[in-house]
Amino acid sequence: MSFANRVDAGRQLADLLAHLTDDDVVVVGLPRGGVPVGRVIADALRAPLDVILVRKLGVPTQPEVAMGAIGEGGVRVINERTMRAAGVDPDALQRVEAQERVEMARRAERYRQGRDRVSLRGRVVVIVDDGVATGSTARAACQVAAAEGAERVILAVPVAPRNWEKGLRDVADELVCHTVPDNFHSVGQFYGDFSPTSDEEVVACLAADGSRS
Image 1: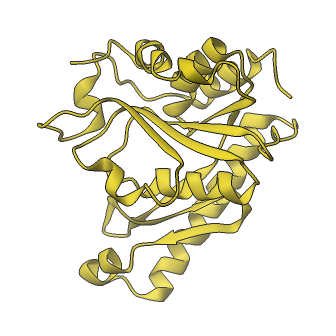
Image 2: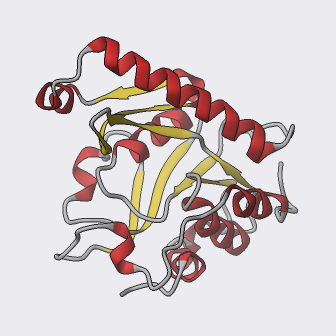
């Protein structure tokens, strides 16, 4: 175990991002689990916190297996190799994508509660999640930030498998990870408490932000 919980993970990860203290930073968490991690980092960097909404597109018969991801601003990442291997046709992909777009819109309304998105244009954007497994969601999030005009995109996670950078170097200017173990099976195995993060917790983390701009 590397982290007691997501707050502890945020504290340890924030130490690796201290070099950004004097930059014009926006921290964006990936809901749900990345938001409490991002809350701690935003506080440490005295930066605003927002969410960056991305939804995994799961294989219909194995929803935990990602065949792609979608994000705000029309970003769409499809892994055609996974689609072929799983026998997913375009119509099935379209159905999954439609469902996830509905959920993404619901979360945007629920989390921001009428607030405008924090502008990413011309700023250093630190994208935070509680860990990386396949990387498809993180990749889509980086593309969202770039499409929104970020000056630099930094992806920061507490834990990821070996060679995690391989599929992300082309979409992020900097990749930061606290723990890269040899025996990675899942993100949760490196947390003492990996309880699901609720919508209410995400809203509370965002509401605690006194520096939104």
